Length: 148
Image 1 (spheres, rainbow, N blue to C red):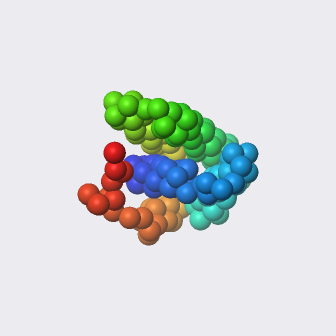
Image 2 (tube, rainbow, N blue to C red; image 1 turned 120 degrees about the vertical axis):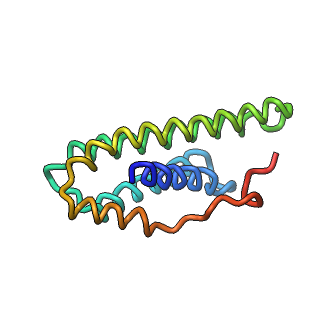
Image 3 (cartoon, helix red, strand yellow; image 1 turned 180 degrees about the vertical axis):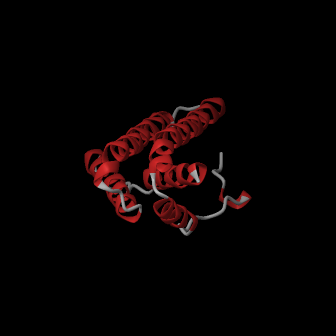
């Protein structure tokens, strides 16, 4: 369950980071991305039926999601800033940095969500399990991988 939650959230973070329109200003794109992250957090809060007693633990999960989105954005921005002058090795290393930021965010999110999930009553855990099991996502295929 924890792994599924972290994976789905990370997929969301990556997909929204790459989905920013290129014809908008950087600040507008950042605001749009931040809004999408906040909408995702609010949506998960509602679906998971977070109670007032769980708000403190939820706040840690939500902040982890925000921090992870910023860290992933920074890795992507770093790559984009050097794309015109990057060598093949630079480009591969930049992709590695993005993948590492993604991996780190999954681990941090899993650690932040674990205490909240553990404290949930069984009926709420079942809701959480259903929310994450029914969330649509694409399976990774060879044709979907990033091209170098």
